[in-house]
Amino acid sequence: MVSQHRALTAAFFVMLMALLFSSSIIFALEHEVQPEKFSSIPSAMWWGMATLTTVGYGDVAPMTPLGQFFGIITMIIGIGMFALPTGVIATGFANEVDKLNFVVNWKLVSSVPLFKGLDVTEIAEVVSLLTPNTVPPNYAVIKLGEKAEGMFFIVSGQLEVELTKQSITLERGEFFGEMGVLDDSPRTATIVSLTECKLLELKAEDLQHL
Image (cartoon, one colour):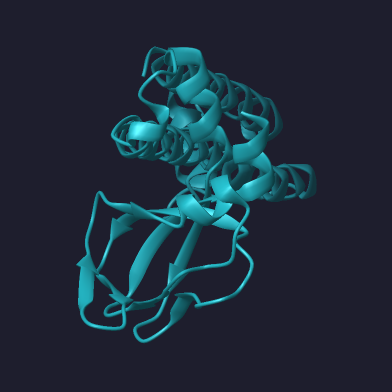
């Protein structure tokens, strides 16, 4: 958050500089033609703010060709200028979401007995290898007899393990598919999504290299 705060401060500083610059230039270009409207740089700042924000009230407008051309340039600068804080805020929000996802993924991985003996650095490495997948209802995530290509962590949703005599329901926070990867053996059951599910997959080759 500190980095976003600094970036926002820098963005607002750039906006202030753009306002002062545009107001000074338009004052120099329009003062002689419209002394009552552009009597000073502070009074020209009304035009500068209205133009940079592309509000354009119309009560103050340049009359000279150079002033009008500079007005066009100022509008273009304004569009880009106000995109700065928006981009900073959006980046900050995305970073916070990434941090939250990392914490959730960390909890999922650290709860697996297979990874209990790993240290912080190793668990972080596992988390970085996870691939997110979203599957619709009634989707066979793994099928009986097929080659095991990865294990899965359930972020949300429900899945059903189809066994010969019974079925088992898997829910958020659980995992499946690790045995076939570890043993390099075919899948022993079919697992179908009951609802839309968000899964994290750890590929077999990545798991074997850990």
